[in-house]
Image (cartoon, rainbow, N blue to C red; front, side, top):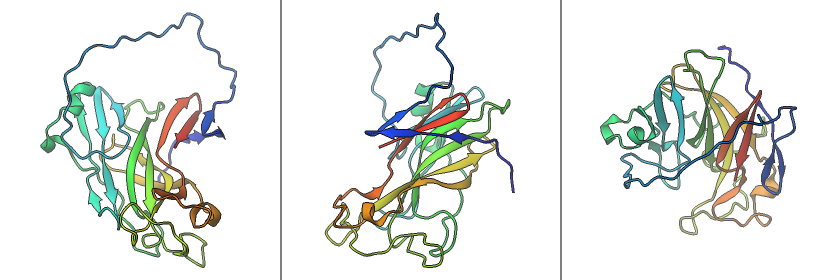
Length: 239
């Protein structure tokens, strides 16, 4: 099995906020960041987008990772998670459709077998600072599943029972999705990825099924993640 640099993750939540503990580091007294807003022309994005715009520098290349991949019984399966490059953000976002490439992603596992299930969206890209080539990337992904894509396994306790499941955003026969957060790793700047698995999910039936949950968007779970790196820790924020 491939070895990976350890990415420590820690987060304390209070009223939906992520609290960053005091690690003894102090701000530099002479550091006074500034910014200035400048006018810009309208940008018309030329690829599918349905997520945070996961992005990062790979060497001297600015790389973005928009859209969706995987199985989705409500909105439809997709293979639109792609990437595009530019010398800066403007150039990357203004790429024509043919400039977007599909990375090699793990196959969706068959129902009842271990592996990647449901649909994923890359939400945050984290570059391993220990890689001098700048090509070792971690991607936090948002994962959505349904009782049909991840049915309950009595042996492992994984998955969802289709009992008292909330209605989805379609018609009254549709089902709500439930969300998880996972992690992928790339050693070649995002051209191919391997799944490191789910790192955050809600397995408690009380938080997912009716009558305790009557949401029509997501059946419990955790939502779209973003991350901030600080020292040895990667702090995750989610909605």
